[in-house]
Length: 198
Image (cartoon, rainbow, N blue to C red; front, side, top):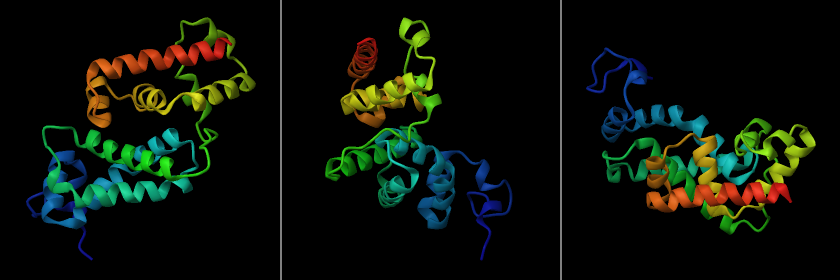
């Protein structure tokens, strides 16, 4: 089996493909399908983490979503707009896959897979609520409050505060204008804080 990791994008031996940019790998993958595997390796962990955070399901339950994301990405690789960040385009596909799965899933998702360190990042450090949420028991309340958020708020908060996406990336992923994204983030945090104060 040929080792593609040591080939250049042009096909000669040289700089390893793993050091190439996303866009360079996308161009190469259009000519050599095996190179798409390097993009999968690059984004497997962050996308799986994102799907777990968005759905609240265990990794094993989100792996099918991840595989469907990569299949759809590969099938539509020629439609990728190089003016966009490849990661935003891939997150968009993963997001749509998760939403479709949630809509067709009869059981309500639970956020029990959201790590405690993630939960704390939803709460502004300068609020009284943050100072009061010191115990694990209280963090369970935060976890439930996050679950109770309407999906339109939960998804923007996860992208902004857990995935560290900037406004432009969130706009690309959710296909929403900047003003809408800003409003959803502000309103979502307000709803979350008010819920916790209650």
